[in-house]
Amino acid sequence: MTPFTADKMFLHADRIADWQAGKLPPPVTVELDLTNLCNHACPGCTFSHLVNVDKSSIPFDLAIRIVKELGEIGVKGLTFSGGGEPLVYGEARVIRLMAEARAAGMATALITNGSLLRSERLLELCKWIRVSLDGYDAETFAKFHGRTEGEFEKVCQNLKTMAAMDKHGCTLGAGFLTDAGSLARGDFDKMASFCAGFPGLDYLQFRPLVLSMVADPTMQGGGLPSTEDVAAIMVAYQEVRKRHQRPGYRVLMSSDKYLALAEPNAGRTYDRCHAHFLQAIICADCKVYLCCHGQGLERFCLGDLRENGFAEIWRSDRAREVYERTNPQHDCPPACRLHSQYRALQQLQRSEHGSFI
Ligand SMILES: C[S@@+](CC[C@H](N)C(=O)[O-])C[C@H]1O[C@@H](n2cnc3c(N)ncnc32)[C@H](O)[C@@H]1O
Ligand code: SF4
Ligand code: SF4
Image (cartoon, rainbow, N blue to C red; front, side, top):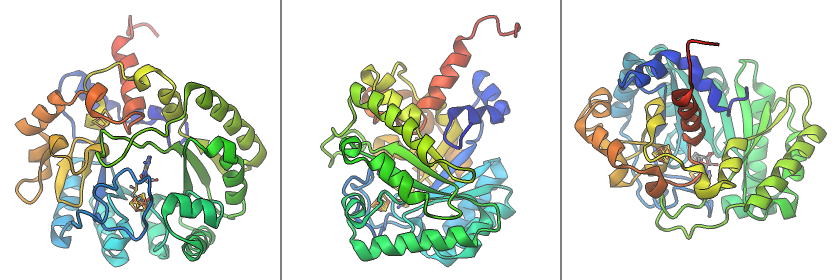
C-alpha cells in the first residue's frame, strides 16, 4: 500500500458499511481550499478558470467555524490545498487553522507549490506535505509553473530546508505532473534523479497532467497519453524506480490514473459518483462542491457555508439532486480523484458468496 492506492479506504469500513446500507456517512476526508489566489502561473493548472480570476478567500472567522464543525461531525482528515496556493492565505493563519483541526481530532495535510513553505510548525502539524515541484531544472519548472529560475531555486531551497528540519515524522513528498512530452524528454529519469539529491525527502510521485474541457471550459483538452504511451510510461517508471529508489526515498506513481487513461472512455463504466461519500471539498468561495474537479461550477455546488452548516449542506436535498444528476461519463474529467476508489467499491458490490472467504 502506498499513500496513493485506493485500498486505504477500507480502513474506514464503518463508513463503507453505512454507504452499502444506503446511508450517507460524513466524509472521511475534506479538502479545504482557503484562497483562489496563487503566486505561480502554471499554464496547465486544472483550476486556471478560477485561480487569480475569481479572487475569493474564505473569511478567517468562517474558516475557524468550518474546521470546528468538520471535527465535530467525524471528518478524519483535512487537506489544505487549492484552488490557489494555500500559503498565500498567510502562513500564520494556515498554522492556526491546522492547530484547530488537530484540536478537533482531525489529521492535517498540505499540498503546496512550496514557494512560501518555511515553517517547522507545518512539519509538526501535518501528517504529510506534498510540494508540487514539477521540475528538475529552471526550464522544466518554467514550463509547468510559469515562473523563472529564481523561483525554482527558492522552491528547491525551501524543500531542502524543510526536509533537513523534519524531526516530527511528517511525510514530505514532491510531485511531478507528466504530460504528453514527458517520455521523450526523459522526465521520469531526470526528476527521480534530481529528487534523490534532497536528503530527507520521503518520496517523489508521478501523476498525469489532465487538461479537461469538462472541468475547465477555458482549456482545450488533449495532452493525454495514448494507450501505447501508457504502456511505455509503465516500463519507464519501473526502470526509474529500480535505478533511483533507496531506503527512505520512494519513487511512486499514481498507476491507477495512467491505466484509466489507457481504457476506453477512461474506464468510466459507471454513471454516478458513488464514491463521493468518501471526500468533500470546500472552496475559497465558501461553497461545498461534489468534488475538487467541480469547484467553481454551479452544477457541482452542494451549498454555501455562509448560509448553512456543513452537515446540513452534506445531507441536503440539493446535495442529493447534484449527486443524482451528475453523470461522470459526461460531466467529469478522466482519471479523477475518486475513480480508483469507485472501481474498488464496484468490485465489492459485485462480489458473490460474501460469507465464504
Ligand atoms: C491546484 S493545486 C493547489 C495547491 C498548490 N497551489 C499546488 O500547486 O500544489 C492542487 C494539486 O493539483 C495539481 N494539478 C494542477 N493542475 C493539474 C492538472 N491539470 N492535472 C492534474 N493535476 C493538476 C497540482 O499538481 C497540485 O498537486
Ligand atoms: S501553483 Fe497550484 S494553484 Fe497555482 S497555478 Fe500552479 S497548480 Fe494552480
Ligand atoms: S470528477 Fe470523479 S470524483 Fe468528481 S464527481 Fe466526477 S466522478 Fe466523482
